[in-house]
Image 1 (cartoon, rainbow, N blue to C red):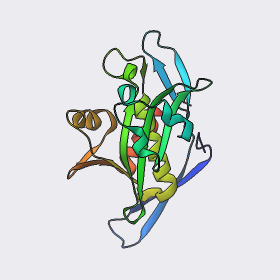
Image 2 (tube, rainbow, N blue to C red):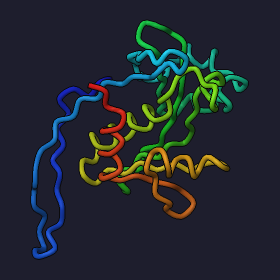
Image 3 (cartoon, rainbow, N blue to C red):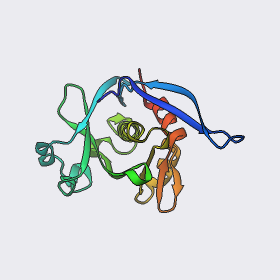
Length: 187
């Protein structure tokens, strides 16, 4: 499931002239996840996997902003370069099935990967895309991913990831999810 090879998504759109739903196609998506080393432009394949108990010891508030130990009981994922145990980014989510939505509770990249002098590019984008793929797998064309941005980063989520303002949260649905996949799929 790490690369979602062979995930099948049936896309349905409401036909304005009819009251039913028509199937217009099937999309097969493979996500090859990479980060780009800023200093060299070198591309590194990464692995996104569930956080394990032993990971929480290394997820310090100083390096990862939040107290990730509080997320121990939550569904959470880590991003690492393949073959390297160093965690570059972390995300935790809540599943809200009655709204066909996955809500990103916390999302962060390691301290050295923030700002204009970051070591690697695309960490947060790959984590958001991974969660979007989980939403597609769970809810198909009704999939939604939301988050509640903190502070000035809200505009960044709109500009870089296509998030829409939805009250106090921001969210993406099928159109934006597919755009994210197109942006972050490096197959």
